[in-house]
Length: 280
View 1 (cartoon, rainbow, N blue to C red):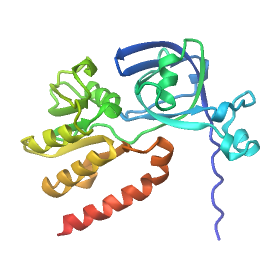
View 2 (cartoon, one colour):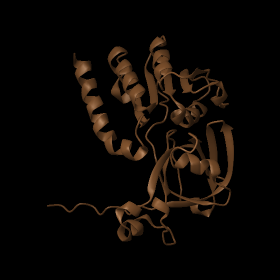
View 3 (cartoon, rainbow, N blue to C red):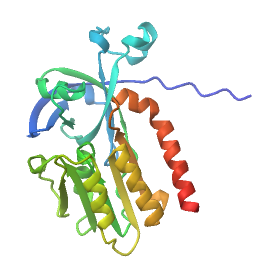
């Protein structure tokens, strides 16, 4: 019986906060830099993400920061708490990593941290991960998401070649949350107001008259509207699975820890429902 390959040790990057900026009332930008990013690389994915590592319950970890050592020496409840964020931009020349955070007041962990963090402070993170980049062979592109997907959609729009055909829908709470994105693509900004997250977004995509040709679609954000748009695109529009990037970044009523623990089961159930509907 062949031996399993040894598990690669998990290495964390360490960086310092270079600067911060409040982009909109509920979006905070944090730019990281420093020598700790010398080993960080990012490819062509426009949905690259990193997992920030926050001390659990005020735990103090030995230096240099070593995830493997912490997991070996500390009880599980004192392991670092992870929060996942999309890479808005990576500048390899200046070794600067830009992350944007949605703020919900004092709610959550990463948002309050981003709102109060000061230049010079150190942060540890894993990554990057990522799987999506706009397919140059597609006839057109569909991008749809809420605030949590805004950084990835913005990065995608800025990566599209000149003349690319794209329809972009971004749902935010109100007009004050719109951002300037360096792209010629006309963005449809949907203002949610008091309506449920994703309701206006799903309706706008459903009402879109699809151009001719093969679409490459990116639909990310709250899990329920992603599920609804999965059904629309796969069943009603007949978009091939390989032409879809679909992900519930978060789910109403669930913390990231709770959502990540149940996400695999949720995705399997949704996929099974989709396959049944497609065959019907």
